[in-house]
Image 1 (cartoon, one colour):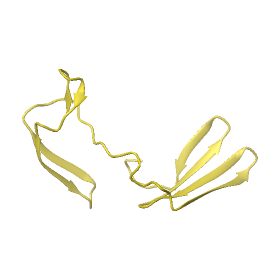
Image 2 (cartoon, helix red, strand yellow):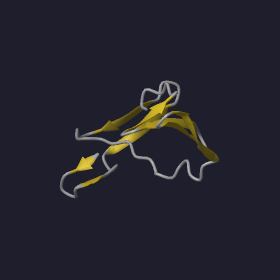
Image 3 (cartoon, rainbow, N blue to C red):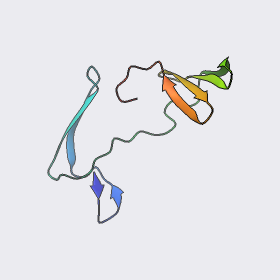
Image 4 (cartoon, rainbow, N blue to C red):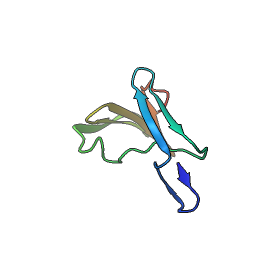
Length: 91
């Protein structure tokens, strides 16, 4: 939860935190409403298992990254990059 006095995120007023993997929901109790954030370490999927780049058209390539937990495929073209082939609503 965002603490305006320290200008940082804090978990002091949050308890009974539960994550439901089936529906990917996060529930918790708190006594104060404020902006919230779900944080994860940046390197949780690093080092990668493998990655590759291949051209699929003029000025368009696919970058595939196999991580510890998932496979990510990005389409990269002139002035754009987009994540493709994912059904996860959070992505």
